[in-house]
Image (cartoon, rainbow, N blue to C red; front, side, top):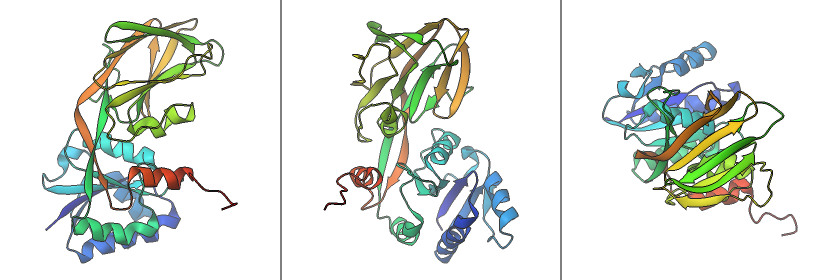
Length: 294
């Protein structure tokens, strides 16, 4: 019997019928379902007739070792949190998108039936995505100082820029006088970095992106570096603190402060279904080539 996990944070009432359909499709195939405890409580408060599950979990290490994959129900932010929950367990994740854009959570509600059929037939591939590791000497993020999308340093007030002295493998690159700097993985290249002019990289690229946010010097452009590069950001400014963010988690750091970013020694696994490749997703989500004149 196949074991699968389901993770979510909240759910819109309009998606409940689709979620119930997902449960039914899995039960029809004798799948044992383990669901994130807080998500199950949320669902049952809104839908008392929710089917029974095999078990609940709060952390990834509570899942059976034989768990085949995890469904993340929500947007890209939810999928990122599910990966943090799994930490470095080798359970691949597939996202069902209930949000708006969803580069990572690429399965729409209309694709659920087909997606389940493909998964049960083992008709899918696995993509390994690189992860960023933060070293900062203050243990700000506990025992999981990693990010899948990006690590960012930004100013905390609305006035003064900050100075970010940047070193690659201890070799001085430049000083960004800016609102901040984003260090992004290929996965994160379609997130915050893209919104401030960074390039798009496919998930398997062996690179990181350094992208300044609103630099004072307009010649400062994003740069792509090999992913075996140690990136050190030494930050100073006129205020008292700057903000250091790992995906959706943030902590304030006092000036002057320094962080070092490198590639983690593990990968996160995501499921790729036929017809849902990265470039196909780009065309659909960014509407490349769409022209009402055609």
